[in-house]
Image 1 (cartoon, helix red, strand yellow):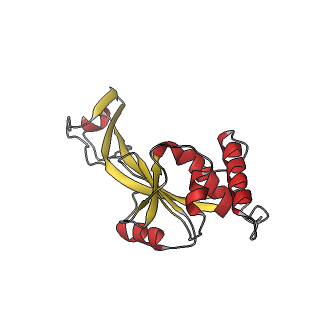
Image 2 (image 1 turned 90 degrees about the vertical axis):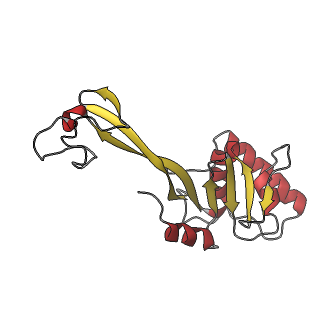
Length: 187
């Protein structure tokens, strides 16, 4: 089921949990709880051209390239223990020529009888006599990714660390994330 507008706005407007939106244009929008070091934290030692992250004034959020998607989710789960991930998807319907050629009312596919007895509805890709597939328009889905140790706050950043210490810590986290040794995602 797609994300309705009211729910999307509520997720975007809340300020406690980071939100990562995978846009169809190949970029990510990231809304974070306010911190003076958000830009440095997002970069996490990545060397990029053009300069990422960029501030998006329209959405009051950060914009980064799509290639950061997985690492950024891990990084956000590590720091904030949870993150909303909003991304496009296409609904897949499954039906079959057996349904289209049926004479009765019983239907066991996802069309719920809509194509039953229609003989050959358009837009379907026939895989076999018992299976055909059709994709609908893109919608957005939202899920909350939570750290496996969400109850443990011991990895929260120290309050009085210097800028150099913070940058060093972010680089270490980024290295661990890129090697898959840090951050847990329930996918």
